[in-house]
Image (tube, rainbow, N blue to C red):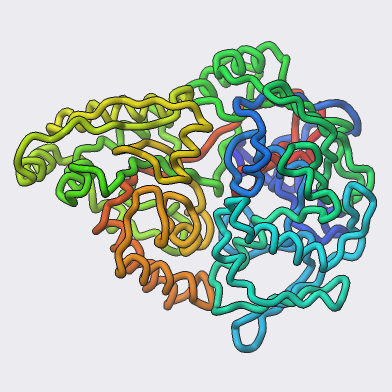
Length: 525
């Protein structure tokens, strides 16, 4: 799951380091075999404190949105989920659920639960906690991006403490996306989540404290159900908003790990000599330009088509993301069941075509605001390239940098005045999840204020399939992709891999499909 090269001998040796414990636990460790193999030369030892550097602080009310390094670190350290996707593919693996079987009519799923799991308070985990977590996630106040799927669960049978039966309003092709996503939370302490006072899960580390804009602390969960895990005694996460300061802290050994560095910074750190990158393959992100289709001149499809033809996607992937990705007119990673290389190449840089489309609009164009997160160096670089590309096509844009929390608020609330640049996730899951859940894409309510019967119908058809893969799914995804390409309320630039960086002192770092940090197998060498 990362960029380390492997030999067969190192791989086999690495597999052996944790295989017995994982087999006994019956769950899939997110660290991945490759990371373990790359660290095979260092023997794991218990104890010590891992020091993390994160650029964005915790926003407790965003726990279920999976946005920001502090949120994803918190979820990865403190919480478990019912199932866990591997690095590639959509075949779920056991986590808190050990096995499952679908209802004969396709409108339900029964899961058998582990019987040896306790919350950090010492209370035993049961099926009632599954119901509470799913119902909480479905509550609109938490802004969970898979809320529509959670709300489609119409019945939950918890009559058996270690078995839960779900009933659906209709077939759900992405139900395992939901079960991989929803953190299992403790009902007795859930009131403390919104205030940031308490975060109680069943994960490898227990939440200790949070000092806003300063740090978070976690300690080892001695009752974790994976034998002899975690190795670390403690995790300390410092909030370091300036990426230059974070890079300096990493190089100086003041932190062992850095999230949210730019790809250029990760390259710089790697050249420094004692820093190792981790490329989060299987947890792809997409960079895109969004459009408020109610704001002139973006209400004219020809202008959105002109933008799509004006963008130099290859340059952005090469320069900003240092070649760790590929240009695409669609959001799907190459291993997605929706990936289609022909459709993905529909819009390429063609300035004569872009200028012709602008000319067809007729009349002078107003200056269009282009909003992005100002202290994100990657998004800033992309915004500047977009501004230059559009100027070459006769479209003037005015850069509008915002602080991250304001940007997120405008994204969720659909408050952008014109164009915006951002990255998005969720395309690495079942394709229907993107179009019925993610804020930019949601067919029923999105940041672009776009709606059409064709798009809503295609999104619903893909969502209500009995499976995320297969011939029927492929046809549904082709129709969905055509809707995205024809409407262009979002103009994709490309797919890329996020990168982390760590010192040689911290080994065994893992991640989940949404880039949550997993230190279950991590240790200090």
